[in-house]
Length: 276
Length: 333
Image (cartoon, rainbow over all chains, first blue to last red; front, side):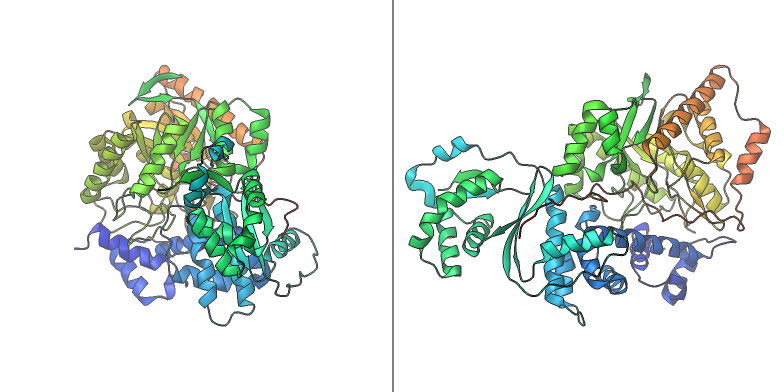
């Protein structure tokens, strides 16, 4: 006899099929064995109601969260990509908002996509938007904490960044592109939005006053902030940033005070922890 | 507010807290007995969702209702989920927490649906055990809701009202009785909705849900995208007559109309509730034989019937991020 768990696992597998289950012999056999059906709907047609709803619900969620991707791809290619993603990536979180986490990596390895790098940039940016939108709130940095850091301890200090901050190296200016695409989607008879040429840049995506800001950073500031956000102590983070950009630590020094002041004012840095 | 049953107070009539109404709700603050939130939309989050929750808590009694617990699934709910649910209950000071008699996924997959359970003694034990422990852990009364369903299992050996009643009794939890779901399920599976309402253990009912549905002829989908249907209002009065005063909620989760339309639906619920309570006090009923026959007839499948299909089952309404432009206007790059 099939246990409830076995029945549920098998049924769950069928609900993630991309095509009508009435055409699926295994689904028909499963449904005939376990579901009652009625005079209006066969067992497999009852199962199909749930499969269809699975795709409607999850497709809706991705369409809402990735409007820029949809704008680049156009309706047909976007639908195809979403269905391929849903057929491949198993949603595991109770939170439907986490559904798109794997989309950038999925696009990066999907065959036959035009403008792949642009799409990966856009998918990554839009995933950052999802995360930043509802990331936990954190109080601003208490300035008096800075004055308690001993002079000789700064190298060991870890700066804690805001949970609502994400950093992204861009190959294409997808932030501006996204704004144009979203606005075109809401407009009647909008002109097609041209795709931009490659133009590397560095971006902080940050929520302030409930709005998601895109702040351009220069490369050195980006590398330092990136190293800090990854948890490196300040001294190590400075070395990492200098190595990655080819500047000396001495050249980095004069910039630090201004950046820290700016990052604290913007709310990128929310705490200071003096390490051992 | 009348006396509590199973520790759950009767709050009157409320509406679901939904994104399209935030602006007017928080500006105008219309009188409402309570609002119900979808727990998962506010678990572990900050930013705009948290801000809106705090605005709601300033003005209204907030009750938590979940759509992703999946209490009857092969795997027990995760510690991450339960921890966040408990933390949210602490923040909202919800007088009770509810979710559904359902499963949501298997083999590590979460399908974000309220999948029907086989009505078996095995699952009575599993769900009752989990529900009892969850209620203890939460420290507030817990209730489970009967779902709409579109399939039935050959392995079911209990009637749905026996299944949910037995679990509620064993776990000592409440029932969130969705009268629209009774009608949908009755239509889809050839049951008598009047019998369903009469058989369920009324002493366990701590809240009632009302919503609209889409009749596709062959089956009804629980779309929550329109007015409550007349036969469901009739069933609601029957449920109140048999149960007494319990909190009642209007759910409107798709094709969400202007706030006053939902408020008008809540006002009608108050009227229907008062009619039923007055009849109950007098030892009478608002439903005569003809009315009951009409409800049963309406729940008899009619494949020639076809409502506008609606979009589908959007349990809990739009997500907090849906339709909201959070981008700063002058973003630099």
